[in-house]
Length: 206
Image (cartoon, rainbow, N blue to C red; front, side, top):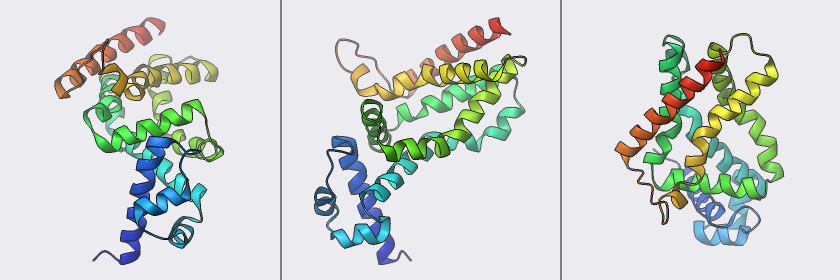
């Protein structure tokens, strides 16, 4: 049975998530969160120790939602050929394109951070992004076993970036004049296309 305190915490988190996505961290006030969640400010202080703590929880949920599927299949990927593992990595990275409300809100929050990064984001990103970056680096090393650490880091960022441009700009890409259709079939096609290009690009460097 769900306790009332857990219901309150979830309501605050969901309200904050929507407001941070719409307005960014700076544009979202505690007053607005309180009104949307239908709680008092004391509840936010009790559950999250204020606005920064609440934002940290929203960011942590966003990071994990975007990477948990990849990390859950890390061991499985080791048993695949490097080409199949890379294609699977791309497919999972693009999977949020097939999601709707929650993933869209997470991507809007990350877009706000791209424009005006907050201290909360900077403090959390190294902790939450490290496992995912490590997974990308392991993939790169399978193609570039003799590469130095700096090259592996740059290649890992490049690998992730090939998908993040679609994730971060999904809404704009779907509108005119581009009008990119991103239904389930199109995402599968896109994953295959990008995966093929990345396999070819990294393979030529080996």
